[in-house]
Image: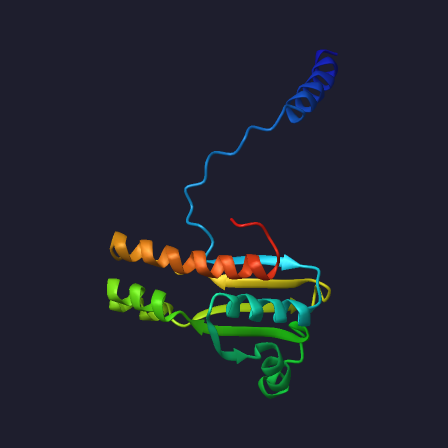
Length: 172
């Protein structure tokens, strides 16, 4: 009989314990994401145009547009896959440089050439055809001087500013 009394008590204790307010997670010491990504519900074409305008508004010129989504659509059968990755082949990468910032970056450390040109991608996954993402790789060093890290932070600020302007988001 004593066991029958304990079982409901254990269930009650388990219920009360599971209803306690959650403990806030400990502050994260993990590295920030290597890719920064924003999303938009606007059309792919309008986001592409807005990104190009935002780059030009900074006095920069797009050197190259890589139509990654179209290339993957075109070559899928050749590599034995017909799985759609991007909606309507919508995945483009825009490469550009800033003469001033690139010079500053590489004068600080010639190894920073690996971060040039800067690239912003615009894409719509096949799984979310109405969603448009705009992303860039963070220029982050795993080694190097504080001066080099600081100037690469300026590159990230430029990239983030371009994306935020294109998507009409407040400054970060």
